[in-house]
Amino acid sequence: MIKSLFTLLTVFGFAFATAQNKTDYWQQHVDYTMDVNMDVDTFQYTGTQKLVYTNNSPDELNRVYFHLYFNAFQPGSEMDIRLQTIPDPDSRMITEEKVSRISTLTDSEMGYLHATSLTQDGKQLNYSEEGTVLVVNLATPIAPGKQTTFNMEFKGQVPLQIRRSGRNSEENIALSMSQWYPKLAEYDFEGWHADPYIAREFHGVWGDYDVKLTLDKNYTVGGTGYLQNADEIGHGYESPGTKIKKQKGKTLTWHFKAPMVHDFMWAADPEYIHDVQQVPNGPTLHFLYKDDPKLLENWKKLQPKTVEAMEFFSKNIGEYPYDQYSVIQGGDGGMEYAMSTLITGDRKFGSLVGVMAHELAHSWFQHILATNEAKHEWMDEGFTSFISKLCMGEIMDLDKENPFEGTYKGYRNLALSGKEQPQSTYADRYALNFAYGISAYSKGSIFLSQLGYIIGQDKLMETIRKYYTDFKFKHPVPNDFKRVAEKISNMELDWYLTDWTQTTNTIDYSIKNVADKEKSTQITLERIGLMPMPLDILVVYEDNTKETFYAPLRMMRGEKDNPYSGIERTVLEDWPWAYPTYTFAIEKPMSSIKAIVIDPSQLMADVDLENNVWQAE
Ligand SMILES: [Zn+2]
Image 1 (spheres, rainbow, N blue to C red):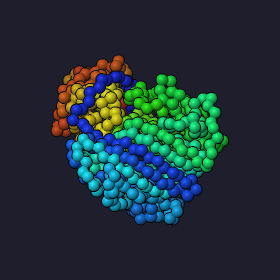
Image 2: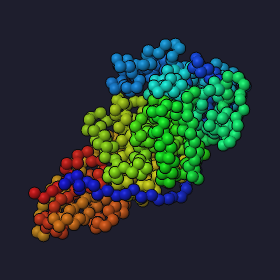
Image 3: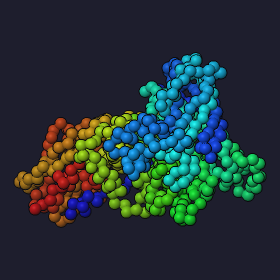
Image 4: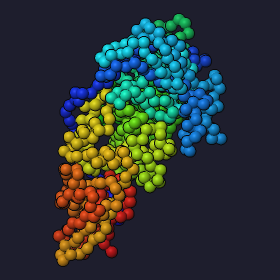
């Protein structure tokens, strides 16, 4: 009975919205030109980097910081020590004996990235390395609105793959090159974000990349950026029918350009198969995966699914703005990058499509809507989880019953465990990886599905589209999203953003009492949890007819449309939050009522579902 009452779900609807930009917003700009030589035998590389940096901030800058992420993969690094001290380390990063894999790296296996010279507008600079961050004192301060040019020489060594990037992955991909170059830290309205690389999450400066990679000519390369010399390179990038001239020498120089991105990833392997698919009126898709008979069938079937996923996200979030996207076998699971992803390839078909859909969705929720993931991890992982679940439902024809059931179960598990920390916790500072994971992915996904419960599904999807239009190619923060939702819904939602993302307050409403009063029935509800919510209440009568009642939350200053078309709804008086109980009457005798249910959609993340249902004896 309970189960069947909980399946009255609304369908997610979609709508358009128009543009409106903030006028007081600013962001920094970078133009990178890099020339890199990779020795595929020693996994060592050298490079030059010309970086033109535009200070659009209102502040004079006398220091800058670069990330040197590969320095994390050294014994004794912060990443190593954290791995050794966190109670639930990432299983990919420890040995079977539960020893940190970083601690076992030898000199030739560890990673490093060092600047060997650095100038600013021709003047030598003083700099020092602090683990994964290069601290640079400027020769000349950069005034607001001014540009400066840094010229750096750097050398690096690709670590054995421990996490995300590295050499010789478990699936034997030679080079998964993410977080590989000296990358300027972001300076925004909150100041510098020169975050050490300890476990996770990134924040980068928007700009244009021009990258030349020289390596063994037998390696096929994929990643961020459009290949400029495709007809010289070949490897499946050449225009159809082009004859590739035999190159003299042992290496090829690949030239990529990527406009308006905030990261640059590449991967290379001598055994990649390279397939190309065209999305109708959309980008070209590239697939790079090992020439391995056990991968072939799934990776071929993956390609039309990627076309469908691209179309789904473009329709429901906003049009994909680049001309290219690459799905590349590499890395250690799945990780999103600009215009591309690295995923492990030896998976069952459903899992392969699932990881592709998740990482592709990140193109929007991180690589176009570039939130500071370290601070607002729920806005990229959560929003991505939400939209990729909807996408999977559509492209894999999954059972349409609540696709978020497992997500809510995971959240309840965390909320009731006593281990929850607020979602505003900095990503590296969760006490447990378990708490980070559920908070970022599940609770972050529920932020949206539950917002759909509060403002209505159509308004939710309209909010997502408007958020994309207003904040693409920027660094939106939580309040930006909330403001869009407020304008679309005509509701005040600060209580929602605050309680859900900055506290561990939980939602628990119950049906406290049902009583006969002359010819009517009095229903008393109770708010047990601290977090406020508006309530949908379903009443099922003995003759199986249904009726709903809606108790808006007073501080919302608004009401949603009836989510259950076809079922009559009565809008009740507002429930002012501070009152622990709330009573309303139904003008029918108690004997005619079979059951009463709070939120039959189960999109409200009530931590105790038992007391949401009343049934006649
Ligand atoms: Zn993700």
